[in-house]
Image (tube, rainbow, N blue to C red; front, side, top):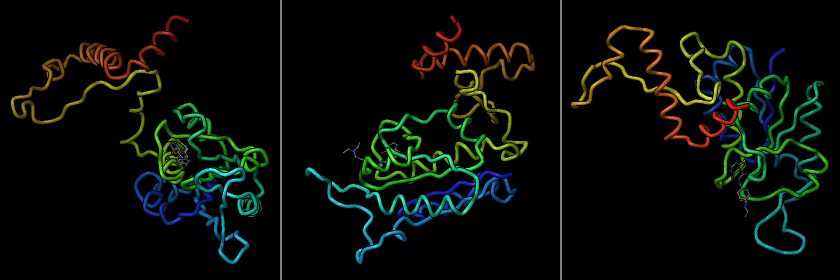
Length: 235
Ligand code: 9D3
């Protein structure tokens, strides 16, 4: 059975170009995943089609309201008998990492909820008990781009999603080190030379050089990953 991904959003039109391009598109064409977009505003019941309201107790901004969210989630979930893993995209969530993407790629139904500009009524979190995910510690205008990041990270992990040419070369994060530097023709460009070891054809030496490069570059470019790598090795 293929993966069904539902997205609940005020901006479904943002998703078309991303889901219709590259690997997300190819994965859907191969039947590995289906995308279903739902407009949250369709579940508004008042004349103004409200999906948010002013916060009790005062303060800036607006708060996504319970009724539209609960009604929409119940409507979406009733479209398929498989229970959905509910995911709320929020800056307060746990930060997405590769292990989480791998875990989510094993599920058969995901419901992604993206808000815009503002927060959620806490009863949405209490009542729907979603997994709360962020894509990093910086402020976006809404959860839509975060949802697309999550979809892309998951869908490319589905078996068969990557062509033979794209596959396998996923070393980064698999073992905690970043990748070795790569070069292609020409051998000299604007006085910058390709490391001679790569041209010599000694494959054992090339492998050794690449591994040393990975370690050196992880130390300097990603000291956070290097610390985690050293810690894991010492256990
Ligand atoms: C005033 C407090 N703000 C929290 C930092 C309010 C707020 C700002 C931006 C609430 C929501 C948003 C919109 N962002 C998201 O919905 C979001 C997000 C993000 O901003 N960064 C990283 N990951 C995510 S996932 C969803």
